[in-house]
Length: 337
Image 1 (cartoon, rainbow, N blue to C red):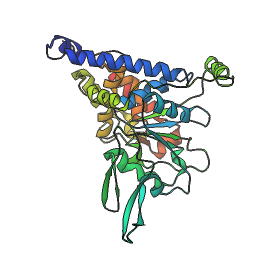
Image 2 (cartoon, rainbow, N blue to C red; image 1 turned 120 degrees about the horizontal axis):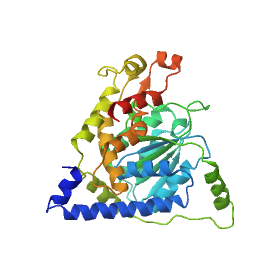
Image 3 (cartoon, helix red, strand yellow; image 1 turned 90 degrees about the horizontal axis):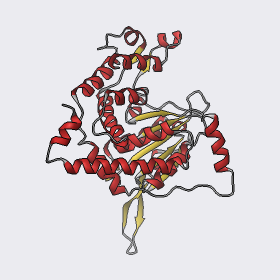
Image 4 (cartoon, rainbow, N blue to C red; image 1 turned 45 degrees about the vertical axis):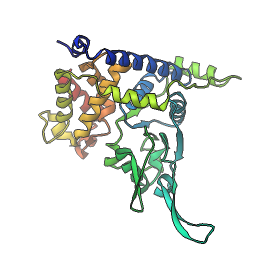
């Protein structure tokens, strides 16, 4: 019996079916609304929405001019989230993101420290060109992304809910960039690579964005609705075959536990347990967005690249031989496909 049948046959679960259908319809509206602003990037939009529904953070990688910033701004409006933007530069300091304590003097002359919140205190933080800041400043987001709180001068400060980081990044081969620390990369649920649009899409961009009237996004969801949807996604059942596929794919990507020759010879380090957790949540979110009651192995295969490409690294021999991570992940996918 399938997982979907288990939900349908359980008399205690009809409200879950209704909720999942409502979430699917809402996110269809969200996707259509975003699609009126962002042209020719359907895969990018869908993977970003999957990440947000799964409660994660997104790293968008592409050359300048591919609407990465525009996508984040549009999502903030459509999802009804309080949005802030930080332009990452080489001179940016951690306090510029997190905030700091300042000494204030009251009317009676008494002095005390007061915490001034930084831009991280929002629901949707756009870290624009995150790889242009120094590693020290990049690492300032680690605690915020994992724990949804920050520690300043020994005191914890909770961040608003929901809290998502949508970071944009230029390719590392461009001048003036710093690679993100591995620990921070692992905090991003997906790394979404953005390609140039197709000819038809670029023609539509020219028509829609250079005229007198340009489409503006409208709000579809409230923050509370997104939080409720994220909680509901965790109730979506995952079958044993899908769970086994997730574990097989992730564990086969580790050179210490893999029996795939290319992984053993060419991978310096592979994905950790956080990759399995991320893939488990992401396949559930993808199923819901596409109107299905349970994920399938096809969901695992569809999300393998954005979930694993930033959680693995090639060794020197692989780079010398021209081996790419895309090729390695394809081999991992072939094991479960």
